[in-house]
Image 1: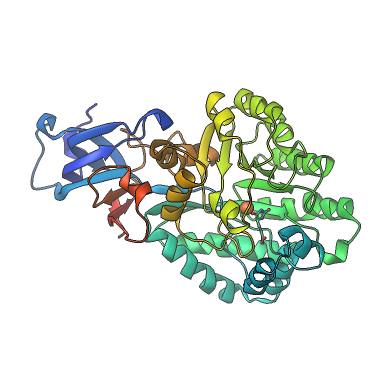
Image 2 (image 1 turned 90 degrees about the vertical axis):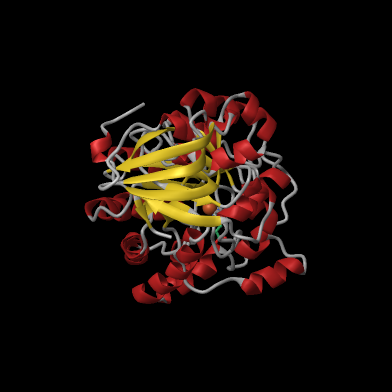
Length: 411
Ligand code: DI6
Ligand code: FE
């Protein structure tokens, strides 16, 4: 496809492209390729031999040294804004305590809530910026960030303001998710319904009024919120015209995914305990399954998500870090590519689709992001690799040579 070459600002030559335009069915490879950018969008791509005439004086021409260009990576599920850390719990778990036992004894999410409430907005920003910088350097151009360690109005808003500011501090697109229904704060002990009243009647309206979120998420789990409470949050979110997502079937099967499908959620995330009926509901609702191998690994889980059945039922699978202080203190999307293959047995094509086109789908931005396609955002990563699967195969040497966001070089 061609647009007028007069508007081109940048041209990448001597590259190979994995467009990811066919979802997870192929890399969409174009070898010996070129790609042009105009106004922050992809304006042309194809074989270098088919490059149309263009004006050398107005276009910046960049030699890609025969590297590989992929869509900029998308981390579609993170919790990187929080106070303190939970290394002490890591030690307890190594001595045999389970994640749920620790949560039920006042540790877990609630301990991070205390630290996050106490932290100043600037301290939260500074610690999250370090994490985000590490993720950016791995090739991430879009990231989702959830609240959920405040569990009161003031601190939830503080977290979402920090998430917003992070997107101004670094050249990354941030999608913010309000996860007020993440855990029950101590002041509402034995009154989860009362807390959900606060979430839907006070927190959510303020979050919307201050334009601080793009989506709403709920932790639907035995140690989180039940189906009826989850449904109340979904309904309120939809009333406010926000999209919805769910943490479901991570530790048990409560039916959260089916409920989310009923309300046309964008994604259901974790899914180790997802039953057949949940898979069918996801297919029907065209939802994305967000798989989180870092949490599976860090909690030393043994029950795998039903990958085979998700694949057989054509459910789009995304991969994310779930970066958070308790179950996945991991800030490497490149490591997730490797773990998606080694732990979850995804193919490298599926894993890469999981952090590009399918991650875009999980965030509801797949009409302009996550593929290398004319008209899509010029969010691109250039890698010093000889074949695409290298991105999944090796870990620890960063092959990123250039990162482009909205058409501009940012690394
Ligand atoms: N599931 C997760 O993996 C994170 N939250 C959630 O609902 C874990 C959060 C934490 O342990 O701090
Ligand atoms: Fe999570």
